[in-house]
Image (tube, rainbow, N blue to C red):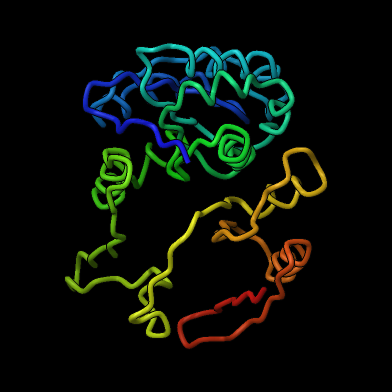
Length: 257
């Protein structure tokens, strides 16, 4: 796997809308939050485009932005501004050789899962399933999340990064938000190549030239506001069966291969 050079303070970061558009008044704020992170923002044309309320410009505009970002030697990272819809329109138009030969930090999730998968499988590029500028950095981008994000981007190839749970501000007690902290995982090590992303997007790749390859890998999924029945249905084509356990503090879903 080809991992990009870590980002440093002052590096140029390209902002792109690969999926849905943002509002005109959001553009300046995108610049501001990226500057506050210590990076120099470079704006793509897609930030100024809006077609039908769900596309940040025609596919050619968004592809042009990505090609420009990967080919510009001064740009060290690429931050997706927002998810939404229509990133799949780009897949048959991208220059994968260009991307493979110019590995850079690439961050996004949700609909950007389309790109994370193909960059991983066609370009051998390790990408970052992480916060997006408009979606996550405008509000509630707390210090814990911000520090975790910057720490990950600053890690060199092969350097380990350990997940840490946040502290509850009122009680001072660590919040347990990771399954890796559950008792059934104590004293166990899990290692391997990770691939995945938004479940709704993952299942749309099946049967296409861009199908996700999960063989021998750790599959992770993210979803929001989906019924358990729909999640179960989407997991079936991936070869997993779903079981549900009602816990005292909520519902937990388990998948078995």
